[in-house]
Length: 248
Image 1 (cartoon, rainbow, N blue to C red):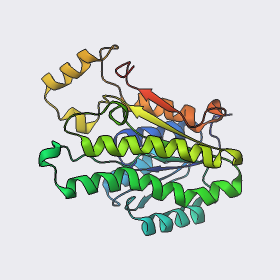
Image 2 (spheres, rainbow, N blue to C red):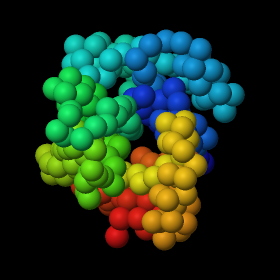
Image 3 (cartoon, rainbow, N blue to C red):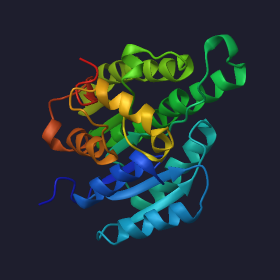
């Protein structure tokens, strides 16, 4: 029996990068996958095909995770298509970096809305489903900079720190209903976004990491599988760092 056989996982922002890796990892353990992104495009369609090739049901939904009404409609559509939601992975996120002195209100609001408000939106929308089922696992994607901070990322760091506080509070609110809520704090993960950084910058980052390398989306996906499955049945309200020892 696979770890997530016949379960349904909802993952936000899963057309690429870490979200896509998580979708593929959970599908490989038998989970049917519902996932969202801002628009239905070739990337979304390609991910659906990759997931279906693993023998599971999969569907992508165009949805702005920062909009509560859209989120409620999306969850309603997922319930109509899949009938249940066992795992929620709040992965959607953006960056709009800049020193606070020069940061615009738009840069601040955009990052807080997409990174933090989206976690509120989807958790709020999915909570009644999990309460009725009396089971569920919620995994929120934070970051090491939500713990340690980072110059030039006050908006991003604040959003990811907020996710940690949100996670711990939700875990206390709904733990009695057999619903767990945890967070993952990735460090320097090699994705399309970080891959665009100059090689010198990437080498400098790697030198600061005890394991002397950047992480992969699959490294994060493996930890997400642990938190999504019954392997972590007595783990809730925790933040697991996936950073190669960078943040100790």
